Length: 189
Image (tube, rainbow, N blue to C red; front, side, top):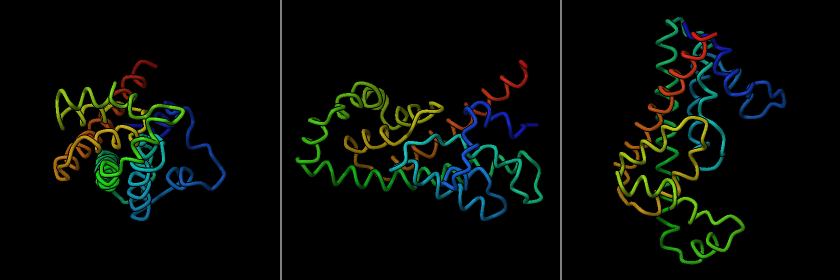
């Protein structure tokens, strides 16, 4: 079994925020509405909120859908991955528009943190070398916000369907890496 407290513990207690934020809504969600909250959270973290996606995993223990834990976990991973893919396509569209806009790229290059240079040196190199498979691989890295990776790649590419598929596969990969890491951590306790 996969205890709910393990992913939260490994996230550093991310669900202990009592302030009524979106993170708290995710941490306390149940039932079908909980899956909707997972989708919305996953959609938003991909293009606007630099938060970890792994925080949705403990929901598998509290969904109250009358299903086995492994089915709940699969549902959470599936819904979150679809949400992240949808958010990525939205970000991809924004990136396509930004690509057309010279002032946006110039502003990013002049910013305090050279987002363009940083992204090209990491995510974009991987993506250029391996294409959409590289993007999926980059998005499989746990506890790293997807936002920058998605925007960096969106400026370089132009195929919406391949981009959505890569972000979906990368999201599932990320969750599987996280679940494996959490299981190994639990078994070594």
